Length: 590
Image 1 (cartoon, rainbow, N blue to C red):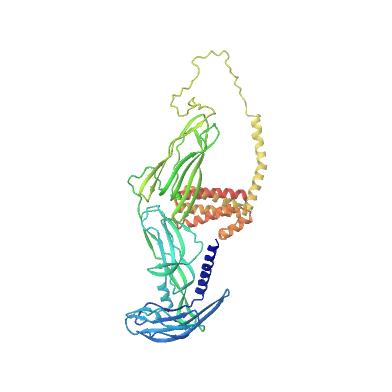
Image 2 (cartoon, one colour):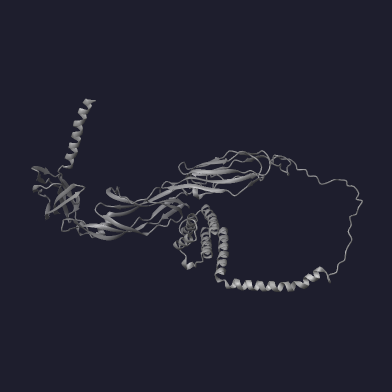
């Protein structure tokens, strides 16, 4: 053990000594503004060192003419107790002829030692149309700033997920200080969902073979809703760019020129393939992806009038929000309530994944054994390019105790037996008593009815007076009449929205009108005052809970988004049910 310690101590000392030497190591290097230039362009050469030196000896710059230099700049700073020092000799050169030239080594003496820079090879080509030193800030920004829309797949099947990632590529020669979107694309004929970009962080990458930095600005997942060539509109940005110039300030720092540039990702065309019609199952309803399917029951045995739940569930990866679940075909002797829809779906760049389910509450009324027949679910798998049909197993619900079915007279409601009903006795005894009643003749004059009809007009006079006062009171209540009218309109438009299910534009117009008129009724605001912030503020004052307010605002956003984005029948049904639920909850709280 002691021997190992003796070996480790020198090694540790050597590592620490090497690290200290690296921090104190002298660097002397040559940097050029570009490795290739035209005959009419200029070349900048910098010789940079991290410690002060003497006897700087530049190369002879064969093939070039020195226009300016050497100019000297020094930078020194202290950060966390560590000194940072830099000294630079700069030259501006003009090429004298076309060809390949080598700028030889430069030398300098630092701390009594001579250091040499590495040689650089420069290629001089024919004169260019616009030399870089004559280019404006706008020209430089155009060449060094690019907005790109990267599409994961250009030929998907209908209802197959694709992703679009918008990246802003920035050359190291410039910097971006600000940006703002000018035109966000509208994804017509696509179901779309934005994937939030949590933080804008610069990363290193390549653009057309050159090193660039890039930032991911926007990510979106698309599901094409029709086949053929579909266009994705371009994203446009207004970008503030800082472009370096050949000028330097008093301290030798580079002077930057600022300009604003509009960049666009360009229009992209997606060639959407139609789903094959060959071998398409009869029960296929648009599901595309890779799924699992199951039908489960909460219990298999119970008594009559007790309840159980049958759950139809689809899980996996695909367009889970864009198709309807298959419905079970249950025996008519079972009382079945409307299903409760549950959705647990998350959307990432690769598409939707999770599960959706319908839970049916079933109540048997009679004893017997009731089968739940197998249910089939079909989907198209874009990876295998084939249709897949999944079938559930038959379930038997055994009702142990309860009345028998009076129509069949048996505990098995599915037994195929002929029904026999007794029509009565064929022979009856002769009745000895006729059970007759005497026929009476009554006169209207001076009868009870006569006096009632006589006093009825007198009774109607005070009722008429009360009715008239009530009408005047109602007519004078202007605010109340507006509230009642708005309530009637809300019921009318919600009813109209139900009729328009399946017709996206008409449905969301009717739904939005219903929400408007409901708010006018409950919050007593005019349409001119209508805004989401105003609604949230007033509902908070009315002590409506956060979830109900959020649900109401989400409905309004869906009505606005429906003008620009495709919405499925399932989404419309969900929005209608959500509107009924939110209005009901808000009514109770208000």
